[in-house]
Image 1 (cartoon, one colour):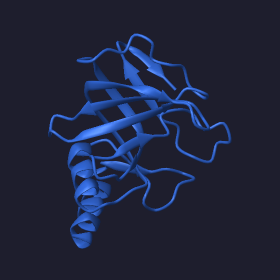
Image 2 (cartoon, helix red, strand yellow; image 1 turned 90 degrees about the horizontal axis):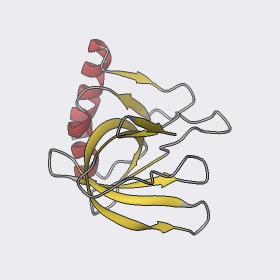
Image 3 (tube, helix red, strand yellow; image 1 turned 90 degrees about the vertical axis):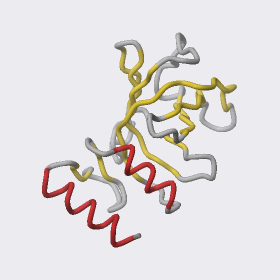
Length: 144
């Protein structure tokens, strides 16, 4: 499976499907095409540290995580059926106050594997400039 992922990455690179982020590890890729397939493959193969862009529908709003940096948390479902926990740092980015179950959101952030489908974080700017800047788009507004 690892060879298949490398082959997919090489094919995307040849077609202009992704760009490496400047200050990130080799695993960290910005994907503009095939993100749901990449997320599905990352989940199946327990891979993490993948910078990805996509969209989904909010299926559940969770209480904020107040341990350490504060995070607004909600779960989205991708069109593939995979679920993804979004952990949006509200110490570094604005809270999405109008967010409701059923809303569509677009995202750009870093995927981390877990057994429920994965977590997306780094949906904000990096104040130190060492990580790719992420974002969430909701109702025409960008939160970062």
